[in-house]
Length: 243
Image (tube, rainbow, N blue to C red; front, side, top):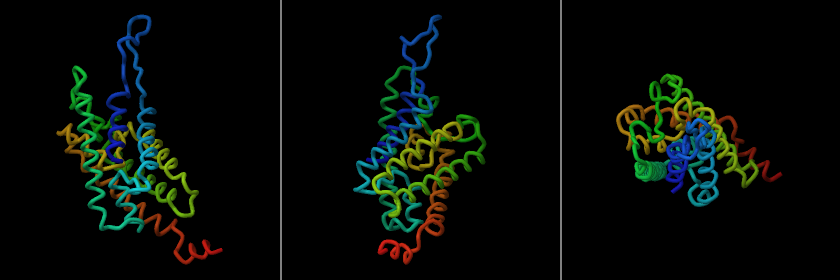
């Protein structure tokens, strides 16, 4: 449910509302101008999906929504490896279901072309919104996923202020999108990338590997880094709690 909401809300805002132009929205010479929410609105939409779901299902499942998050939490020893398969499978299923419903809605508009629109799929090179190279896109996804996991691990640390983690995590995802929509259309989430790619096919599936490898690697590195560098050792944590 959580990953469904992220893909439907985030990608839906990009496909349906980012550059919307109404027939009645015209300037003096009759030229249409966009009324859409733009890149800032799409960035906020992605952040809001995480924030709202974190409060809705965080107490049930931890609200991972993202294979890279699950893998990162496992690397940080915050999540059992025995549950990775079920979590990642659920995330993938939710993402594909959301992309499918979004495709049905978007295709209800005359002239809709799933290949031309891209259905908010992620890409590099000629399929990057800003034509960024493969190396640039890989580095962006790796670094941004790494930072996303560090923020998640820090915000959910027992030493952090309680009850505010969803706000920090939602704003972090918003910031990540503000940075990288022009680079890769922003993934940092393999399931989010897979959902639209299934329906776009072609180039989106061919380039999908990057949006699994880079985020998963970023999540793994962040999990190990946080647990080894930023996590308080168990004896020290116990002493602090007692004192």
